[in-house]
Length: 195
Image 1 (cartoon, rainbow, N blue to C red):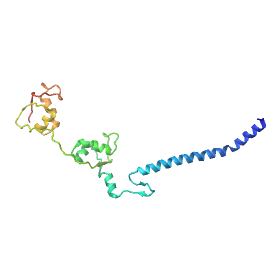
Image 2 (image 1 turned 120 degrees about the vertical axis):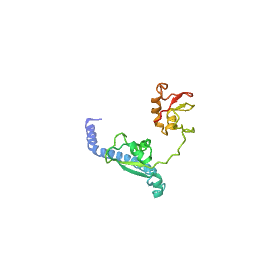
Image 3 (image 1 turned 135 degrees about the horizontal axis):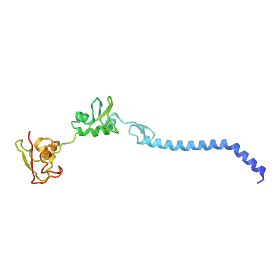
Image 4 (image 1 turned 90 degrees about the vertical axis):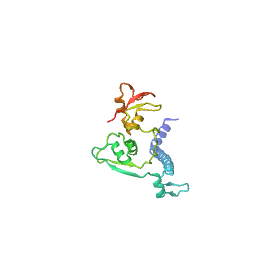
């Protein structure tokens, strides 16, 4: 190719560069718009609070369906000195439900609450109570107990004091014979301290 024709071709390409760039930009915008539109269409098809149905009509759930989707919730405003265990005891009569409150509020650190912070207190279904031990309670005048198969210090504390979290009291009174509070044996005799 002669140098003059080469130079003419390069000049034409330089002059056409803005047009080519514009056309490529339009093509990119069209492709991104098409893909974004498909994504949004699929998203709204699956969205539970209203979406475009199969024939293009708007589908909105009834108030009854919305109520079924969202559990009933109470709110609590944190006061000075509050912590999740205390709040759970107030609403659920069990401090162990603090986990439910922490999860419902997506708390990154459940140990940190701020005065005035609004917490969601979700409604939970009450669980049926299960009997931990079918064995009878230990009479209040009994000061010794012979361990039976399946016993633990917490179960014995539950039967003796009505509080399974009182097991450290039993362990303290029997430290000479019980080295590990998680390991007791059938036939072992333990003292039951009484007030």
